[in-house]
Length: 324
Ligand SMILES: Nc1ncnc2c1ncn2[C@@H]1O[C@H](COP(=O)(O)OP(=O)(O)O)[C@@H](O)[C@H]1O
Ligand SMILES: [Mg+2]
Image (cartoon, rainbow, N blue to C red; front, side, top):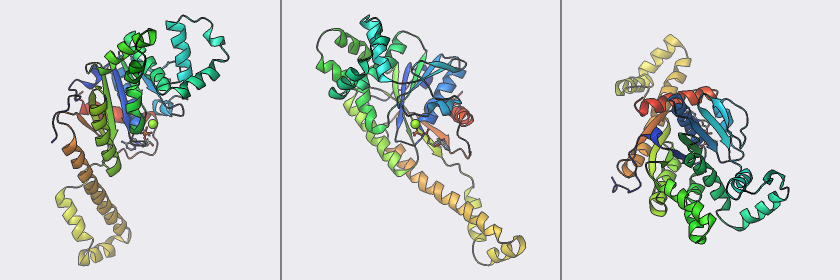
């Protein structure tokens, strides 16, 4: 086991104010972010969940249509929004610079694109800034972010520091100061890394955790291992299946029950092999994580539909992992 990372946080997940859910694309970030949001709302917390990807599908996981920048209540105490950096800039101009009639500034879009593309970190800070503002103003007890994938999230999270170093005085500097304070306060802000017991997701997870510790002061709150295959058979079962698959027993079985039995035994064999393969990735993850990181397991859901019901099931699994 490696050294205790200073960024490891041992604090109840739902007691944070701001959680960034990240991970390799496709591992289940949106599923887990939605489930955390649902769980928090069920436990009485006024919760906002926000997707940062404009083409995101968070609404599907919450059982509603496409989301807007304006947060809507999707179920009791659970609010959802989709990040839009231009809307975020307009809101910022209205709130902090008291620029009136921002909504009528037709040319803003062009100017915005120009600035956002010229200066690195502008879009990122408008994303982080909006979410941090919701926390600062106590509009919500918890804000859950369906954040960027592993490749981009460090840049996103460190954008206030990057801009802080660039701008030494003035309003922007004041803004980044409180943001950095909130983001680096491990009692308030944390990262949840979603992974799967597969080679690439585990590698990316370990790399991301290294970068979070090395390049930022943001806390790592939990690692969620998603799509864990259940142990369907005991060791004894496996041995019996093995015997039934070969030689004389297989012949007798086929005579008595028909050809279909071969598929059943092959299926059982596949399930065992898949699970064994995944165990080695899980072991690698566990052995290389900094000590003290909360590992939460979510089983593979054998469901055809992946809407709000699946989110509810994942929320239940996470809830029992968290001891509720
Ligand atoms: N525990 C699970 N079991 C089975 N399928 C899952 C599980 N978690 C997520 N999925 C499915 O995997 C796909 C990717 O999940 P998603 O949450 O959209 O990942 P990401 O946001 O990381 O791209 C979706 O179809 C989702 O329904
Ligand atoms: Mg997603």
